[in-house]
Every structure is written in C-alpha cells, then in structure tokens.
Length: 246
Ligand code: ADP
Ligand code: MG
Image (cartoon, rainbow, N blue to C red; front, side, top):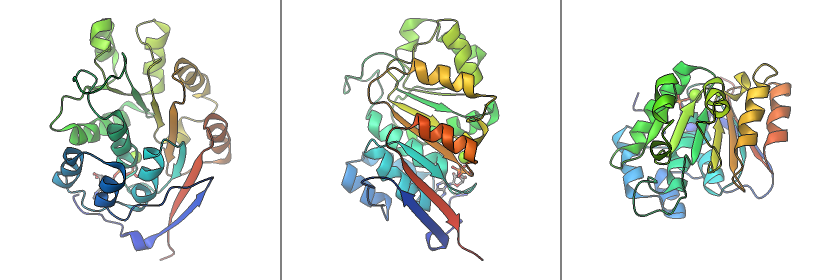
C-alpha cells in the first residue's frame, strides 16, 4: 500500500462517448482545473496517493464534469478513489456546515454487492473525509435505525450500502433519496444482473433529483450488465482500462 503498484504506462485506455474531458496527469492538474480543496489534496497525499492511476486520470475529470460514466478497470487499479474524490469534491462541504445550501437529506449513494465491500468503501471514504465533519454512513440494520429520525437523516452526506439494505429502508418509508445527486454502482457486474435488477430499479426510481449523476465501476462488464448500465446512464462515457500484454 502507499504506492501505485501498476505504473500508468502499462495501462491501455480506450474511451467512448461525446465530448470526453481530457485526462489528468497528476492530482495537482485536477486541483488546478477543478478547484479541488487543498484539504482533499492533502488527504490524498497523507494516505500515500501521490499519483493518479489510469482509471483515476480518466475517470475523475469525467465525473467532475458531471457526466455519467461506465468505468471498466482491473481489480487493484484504484476504482474507489476514482468516484470518491469527485463525489466529495462535488458535494463541496458537509451538509451540516454553514457553507453549502444543499437541501435536506443524503446527497450521494454508493452501492456495493456485499456488506464487506461496502465496509471497504466506507473506510476509503473516511480517508478523504479527514479534517471535515462529513457524515458518511455505512448502512446496516443498526445505522438504518438511527436514521429513522428525520433530523438525523437530514445531516447525512453519503450512504454506502448494499442494494438489499437500502431497499429495506425505502420500503419501510424511513429513507428518502430525493436529494441524491450522485449514485455510484461499484462492482457493478455483480449488481446489474437479473437477480438484483428489481432492487436496482427501485433505488433508481427513488432517486428523483433532476440531473442526477450515475456511474458504474467494475473490473468486467458482461454484455447483459453492460446493456442494463447503458439503459440506466444518461449520455455516458465509457472508459476501459486494460493491462498491456506482458
Ligand atoms: P479496485 O477497486 O480497482 O480494485 P481499490 O480502489 O480497492 O482498487 O484500490 C486498490 C489499492 O490501491 C488500495 O489499497 C488503495 O488504497 C490503493 N490506491 C488507490 N489509488 C491509489 C493511488 N493513486 N496511489 C496509490 N495507491 C492507490
Ligand atoms: Mg473496488
């Protein structure tokens, strides 16, 4: 950990879509282009993230320009930061702080197929959240209960959950997703299938915020999952990172 184990020259990157933003060579490029906060930048470097990986170089500008994205990149290439950095940057500040007028309720949802994966994503969130009072909730039966109180719920910035857990709260009426501006599917190949589809559709339908940004990340995207993704995304950009032949 702490070092970019796959140097970017070994990545073969293909992109598809309209008006694709230029990739960023460094995190400093991203800061300058998109006015990222110095706190976010120092949180990256303090956690040993000194140089973006391939999917980060391509994916972060796309998400910061509010585009929908289907990102396919091998395991271990840093997909988590690819969506977390732009999510934190776009939310700008915790909802409970005075410096954003963000409306009420959770503004970003990250879905993962298993609780263990959601737990790992939550840990990455905590790294980027350092130094500000972000409320990032790893959704479980227990945390969902604490959010049955609307006042508590309105102060949450980001929820990380499995689809099943989130749908349970939607169905009990104890959660609203109407202020969600960023909806991310991680390990999407394991969620965009016929088994999960009814839950996914219920979640997407509950996210009624206009111009919501959606993104899917995966190591692979089989044809069926790709079709579901493309039907769900709006004018998406598709980025595929492969390892060059060795
Ligand atoms: P993936 O989701 O693509 O499998 P992860 O997001 O889990 O990859 O990241 C894999 C590992 O690389 C993690 O330990 C993470 O902390 C680390 N990592 C991510 N981005 C960087 C970076 N830019 N520089 C160094 N390490 C990174
Ligand atoms: Mg991952």
